[in-house]
Length: 132
Image (cartoon, rainbow, N blue to C red; front, side, top):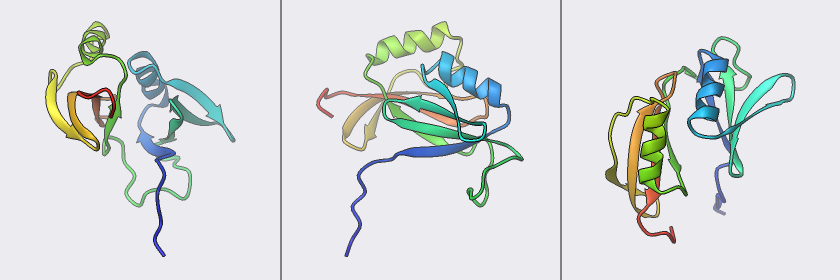
């Protein structure tokens, strides 16, 4: 027997400053901040979410070496990448790269790289072929 994975439901980021993280992901990336369970916080986009763990107060079970700034995340955007670039500049987000060509899971993408408040690498990408 083999397992077939359908899609990613959520991932978890360990953060130093919950408010700064929520503000960044809401203001810069347009994610919805939601509270669930017993005061837990998550960031929602599309039909996925990112659960947030406060450093030193991680919810168990958690990653063996959970630490802020250890993630490398790529989000596919439906907004034209040139508009994404302009938005990031308007939000005064320090960019690591301008728009660069890369290869995504389904073909050629154009990407912009920057970091969130904890130093996690964020890549915003658009497929060159609108069908991907």
